[in-house]
Image (cartoon, rainbow, N blue to C red; front, top):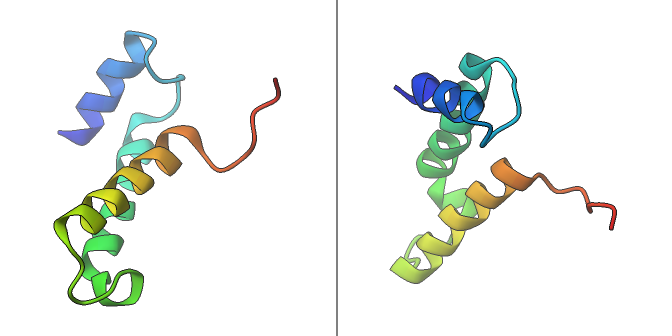
Length: 71
């Protein structure tokens, strides 16, 4: 399902053209690792706000990378 989502978004020009299967695997892998290793990434009693911040941070890194864009 994730692969189809990314493929459709690439066809619409939302994401750059890449192998949608690889993009889906990386995306799902980031969230799976973050979810399964919550105690190593976040405090055990993290608030819902902290968990949302983590999810948004992962999505931002996935979608925008970590490199500074040239202006």
